[in-house]
Every structure is written in C-alpha cells, then in structure tokens.
Length: 293
Image (cartoon, rainbow, N blue to C red):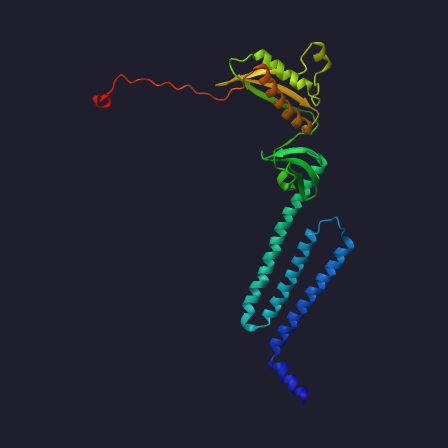
C-alpha cells in the first residue's frame, strides 16, 4: 500500500522532484568544487603571490556549474524548455568570449617576453610615456608593468599596451642627464655677467659632472656651456647646460641652481623681467560735431 502511494506520488510529481534533485546536486557540486579549489590554492600558492587570477577562476567555475545545472533543471520543465536552450546557447557565447579574452591575455604574455628579452626598460629605470605618465619601473610581469610615479602611486599598464607606446627612458644605455637652466634677463642687464653667474652656479654645485672629453679639455673648452638662446618680447633668454650622473641628481641640480641663480642675480643687480606692454593713445583729428559737444 505504501509503495503504491509512493509510486503514485513519484509519477504524479516526477518533474518537480527531478528539478529539485538537479538543483540540489548542482549546489552540492558547486560548493564541493569551491572547497576543493581553495584547498588546491592553499597548497600551491604562497602568501606573496597574487590571488586575483585564482579568485577569478574560482568565481568563473562556480558560475559555469550553476549555469549548466539550472539550465538542465529548467530543461526538465516542458514549458520552459525554450528558455533552457537559450541559456545553453548563452553558455556557448560565454565560451567564445572567454576565448577572445584569452587571446588578449596571450598577447600580454608575448609582449612581456619581448620586454624581458629586448629590454627597452628594466626595473628601476625612469620612463615617461604619453607626456603625463612618468615614474620608476617597479615590476615587470608577464601580464603588466608596474610604474611607481613620484607621488608614490602605482601605474599598472598591460604589456601589450606599453610595448606599442613611444616612451622616454632616462636610463637606457647612458644614465647621465642634461638639464637646461633657462633664465630670462632684461635688455638693460649685463649679458656677460649673467652668463658668468649661471656658469659659476652650475659648476660649483656638487652634483654637477664634467662631461668634456680629454681633447675638449686640452682645447680649453669651458666645463659649463652657457649661451644666449633667443631675444623675446621683454627679455633675453639665456640657457646653461647642467649635467648630472642620473635623473634624481639632475632634478636636484636643476632646482638648486635655479634658486642660487635667482639669489645671485638679485645681489648683482641682474633683472629678471616680467612681461610689459606699452599702450599709446592717439587723438582722432576727425571728430564729429556731436563728439566735440
């Protein structure tokens, strides 16, 4: 009697029971795979490694299991069979999307290998790209390059992107850096005295280096080159060439020399002008009677 009742119930509620069993199996498999994956990560990954990729794979695996399980559960319901087919088709589209995404990831890996092999930059190099992104290379991985800017922020650039950029490397081949010390003086100031002051301040700075060759020294070439660069509207532009062993020293050298030149100019009476305009008012001889009244 009981068996017959159970048999009737199973026959009558076959579809709901089957759907419920599929959902329960899906949940159990998803949770079991998640625990198994975490156990695998705990044995294979150290604390210093980035877990972001592993977390992405874990979430993707759970999503696929739930998607397939619920699709089969809905498929068992005759009315919702068409919806299940759409979900399965969506899973195929998802697989295609993952394939395209993996192509981009493969491109980053290949670009990273080329960067490591040909070395357009290495760790601790100072690079500039896109005119507004500059800093020190902190890390080069197969996927991306990490640049620490001078505000201690990290700029993360995919290798496939940075390998196609035109960049300035301050340490490539030769780390010596030249900084321009540009100062404008008034037309009434002594040009020779201004050039002498700029040369002395650059030469006396402890971070300045002598880049002259032995033959240049024999010829008596000056250690610091200073020249009149241009004649502007209200000033005479003078440029001094200041050399340092690397980019950090060059930055300090430029800042210090700019300050010391300004103080020397104030002491020696060299004027650094600001823009001035002369405005002339001309009387109009042909005024109308109304304007005269």
